[in-house]
Image (tube, rainbow, N blue to C red; front, side):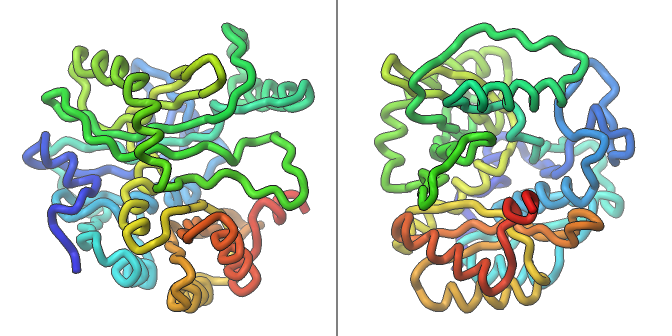
Length: 349
């Protein structure tokens, strides 16, 4: 049973705006073939020239199931009806999203709220000199015309956390939750290692207490300067305290996950992991997810699926919710054995 007042992307925006569109693709600085080009004041480190429209579509799709019905959400291509049906079946607490095709919609003068960005290229945790070199090489490859400067070294990091919230026009804050950034590039994992979950809802109160005072100066500064909207604050934690290292003013994949997580925790599945897999085909994948979900050991949700490239026909993003980490990994293995393979293994082969 859906509730029109459940917290969704559009429900939050509707507290500040009488009407708007949620727009799932932001202008690109580097990709001249993108549907929307940023050639104005700011240079955005977003999509590289070799990133396909299919990749952008995959990221955009993740906002659709949590968009809600208060405002339409615009996409540059339609969503597979099988995926829409999957969202209705396994996310029944969210209102059906009002999904519209950008090219067919007369947006008039309604504001467009950007709903995605390209992440995972700005934060690397290095435990060894070799890992640090790989991180610097990666950054240099993306910022070819810029000199890398080390301004500070933060050691003995225990956690990398992403706080997601919505900052209202009146300065009040709706705290969405905290995601742990654990799947870092270049970090060597021992065999059998089980990483920290992306979200453990049982830890949310403790994390909010830890980070609330750290985040408050950021939101106060943004409010003083007239900003309102979705806000992500990235924080490193060590034995000396908590350090704000990045602020992202956008709807992100973490936002979408944290909107779903409390509903899954209410069903008894507080732990969640996000995984990218290469499915045999979308119909087979959704059938496998249905079978898994009916076992009542957890719940898997397909957030996005689409053609990625000629070499890799399809990529799917699935989030697995379970009672604990061990159950979540067992469900992941079951899903990959039946319906696809781990994209990281394929990429290395």
